[in-house]
Image (cartoon, rainbow, N blue to C red):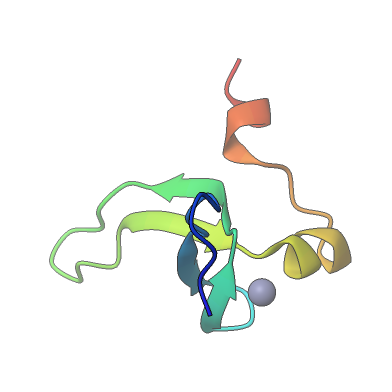
Length: 62
Ligand SMILES: [Zn+2]
């Protein structure tokens, strides 16, 4: 069910509970580790952000 005019909900991968989540927030930017390809952007869903007391990346980077 989609409502026209409804802003698109962003779905992303929550790195904390390792699952898909709606409205993920960027928490951490990991520099690409050599060879492993583990670098990237770590997102957390609002629920994990609360339970782990994560600080959004946008608030950390001044
Ligand atoms: Zn989560």
